[in-house]
Length: 359
Image (tube, rainbow, N blue to C red; front, side, top):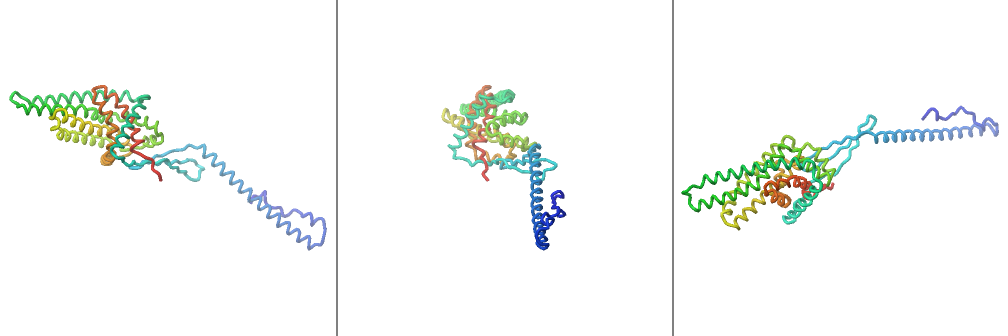
């Protein structure tokens, strides 16, 4: 109770001063009025104190609304990120924590549906990035062109050297035919695998180029999700080891495919077409995986998790990368599509691989 609002019981009661009625009635009347006055002033004091507390609380709220807000992103390995918002103030009572959208891996669709989904992501994302290319597109394209040409020239030269060393004047017809078939199969392999290896090398040496293209496109689709991934530390230095391991895995697969399709390459037309289709499928799978390197890294997926995810969504990844793989098989010209493929990978992530987690 405030001192200024306390009841003044020393004030003379007007009824008592007037001398009206007997003394007993006057005394009882004065007592009743004193009690009534005390209750009135107590209620008045209580309301004053409550109003003061409310005013103080409103003042704190107005102050805290003008204070800076700091955000911290904590990323998990499988689900998406949670944002914690803290109002930092010396006179704030408690921290305020808010939740943003969380994401999880989408369930894989049937093969045909997944192929169509991947193709739609490739075409839609490619045309979108073609209309508004990122500033990193030129730098990445130049690096990919140089690396691809070097690998193409080196690969074809090595194949020709090996083939010429196996064929002599005494070599029989069947042996010569087998060597020619092997050279043709290896040439196809070099044409398809060289761009993928070039992209893998550029991603490791100049990772910011791919990140700039990917996040630039993802911000146009889902800005909040792009900021969550971009702020994540991801695999950090471990990402280099994961990238090297992935490239070595690609080379092992390529060697195994060569051995499996070598007999097919000796069969004119049908066999060579089947071998080329198998090579296209594997190269598309590897290229799609490589285009998702930024997403995998920022989501902290190690090699085993990446293999599991790519296996679950292999048909979507193949459908996405197949058009770009065919374009990359065209010397020089194909390398100009890599930047568009990297941007379109944001559509693949947003439309196919991830979905919002409903809690």
